[in-house]
Length: 281
Image (cartoon, rainbow, N blue to C red; front, side):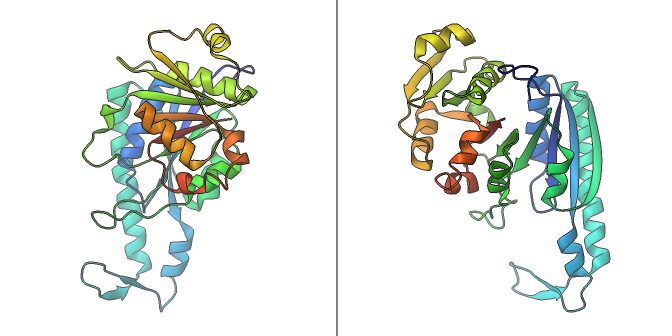
C-alpha cells in the first residue's frame, strides 16, 4: 500500500456500491477519504447477479414488509431499479468531484463481492458498507463485508452507520492500534496522515508487543498535546469497543493482518462496527 515499509500512500480509493446499501453516504465518506489521502476515487456499482438469476425464475416472489403481501419479482423491474440506483450514484459522484476537487470514475459490473475485491489493486483502498440501508427504524442487516474484508488481508475501510442522535462530524478523534508489526507502523503513519482534523486527538492503543510511548512519539513525530497513549491488553471485540468508547473516535485504524489473525474474536465487531474501521495492509 505504501512506497516503503512505513509510508501510508493510496493511489486510488475504490468504493463498492450495492443495491441493498445506502450508497450515497458511502460515496461521501469515500470521497472525503480520497481527498485527505490525495487519491483518485473510483465508484463500482455491483449489479447482484444472484438477484438477477433469482428474478429470472418464474416462481420467485418478493415480500413487502409494510403490507405483508407478495408480488412476482420481475427481471425487467429489477434491471430498471439497478439502472436508477446507478444513475443516482453517478450524479452524486459528479457533485462530490466538483465540491471536493477529487478526480473520479464510475463503473457498473454484474457479479458479487468478488468483483469489488478483484477491482481493487495493491495500491488501492477498498471502501465498503457493513450494514444495509434501514429495513425499519431500528433494523439493519449485516452485509457480511466485515468478514470478507478481514479474510482478504487487504487495505479496506469498513463503514458503520452514524449513531442515532449524532452527526458524522461530531466524532473527529482517531484511534490507532499498534501491535509492534510493520503493518502496525503503517497504521500509525495512516493515523498521522488522516487525523489532521481541527481539535481532533489521536489515541494510540498499544498491544504488549508495540514500541514504548517515547519511541513512537519520536518515530512518527506525534504532537504531545494532541496524542493520548493507552495500553490494550488483548485484541478482541470487548477490548476494541472499550478503546473506541474511551477515545470517542469516528475512525479506528488497525493493521489488516492483526484483524485477520483475530477474525474469530472480532466477528461480532466486524459484523456491526461502532465506528469506521480502516484496515491497513
